[in-house]
Image 1 (tube, helix red, strand yellow):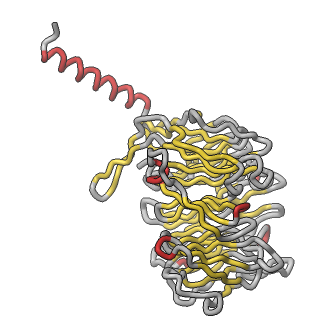
Image 2 (tube, helix red, strand yellow):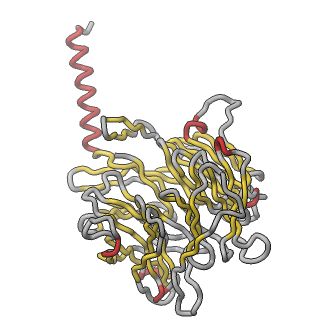
Amino acid sequence: MKTIFQRSCLLLGLALATCATADAQGRTRARLFWQDDADATVRYGDFKRQGNEYSLEAKTIDGFPALDVEEQSLVQMQADSGLILIGVRDQADGTIGSGWVAIESGGVEEPHGDHSHWKFPSAPSVLRSVIDTEQGNPAHLYHYGRSFVLANDKSSGMTITTAQRLRDPKPSADRTTFVLGGGGHITLAIAEDHVAYSTWIDRSGENSGRVDVVGLGSNYGKRYEIRCPSGGLHGATINEGKVFLAPADGVCWVPADMQMTGSADDVEVKHLAIGKGSEDKPLRTGAFANLKNHVLFTAGKEADCRLCWIDASSPSPAISTLLIALDEAEGLSTPVVLETRDRRKLALTFAENRSDSSKDRLIVVDLDPNDDGNFSDAKQVQSIAVGPNQIEGHSGHHTVTVLPGRRQVALTNPGEGSIWIVSLTDFKVAAKFDVPGTPTRLIALGG
């Protein structure tokens, strides 16, 4: 019979062996999740480092719904509190099957005073999913505050939920809320629990330029409409108490009506022109990104391409521009904006070539070289050759995401099936990993 001392030694030995095995495999710096367009599924991998060597092994997620690759596709995905939500869209206005999938990341965030650390004790798993003919065929998924918001195009509204509600184990739990607003192909700007601005895509007709202003939370039931001077609305965000919208001509903005006291008659929609392109047509954007008090976006194509930004804290917002002239058949992706560990403010945007994807590159703009909070000295600092895209319609684009610690980013190369790690210090490629299928959108959890 083993003594207490012998048992203690045995347990200590097992613990040391476990730690040694973990050390041999390397420390997990982040858990990456990416969409595989080839199979309409989500894969994941733990990005690890041991010494100067990195590793990433692609794995499947048990229980992920099998989709019809010819008829269904994954759209945007967002994460909150260790839970990931992915939208599902079909090619027949939602009549085949659309909706969403919620995935538990397998990660646990441990608070440590003014910061936190993540551990990944378990594999990811599907928490729940809803894919049917009643979900309105979402194309966009947003994360505002703690809320996930799906734009249900064919239902002319939005589905709002949170990680906490999705995790509620009660069979009768009210896990989502549907709110009417917007139409056609909806984009959303939301002040959580106060108000939603939901756009209409129509370029002409009675709904051209229409934005539905819809009360949320204690404002539920209140609503009115505002109008932009041009239609084709695609793009919306909120920053510093102002809502920014992307019609066919320039950018529009209004103060966010947090108490829903406005009306269609007394809200003045302000218009900001981006400029005109080589064809003498007004320039537009299709999506926004936020970095503190700045709203950023790209506009134009080929020689007219530019990175633009607006200081949302200004009482009279204006558009500033940095020209990034590209070659024929090239365009810029929506920027990913971030502040690095050493406080550099960067915008990352892909120059993607629809004719020759071997020319694709990641462009890096230092937004504030002198760190005075003003982007007037913004300049392009790097152009990094990347792998090819595989653009078909709205799919097959590169994506980049910042890794925990803000010292590196991960990016996808759909045309060659790879994920690269790039340093934010010297902008060199630190590692390249081949993965199955066609990797596109990705996110990273950890820290």
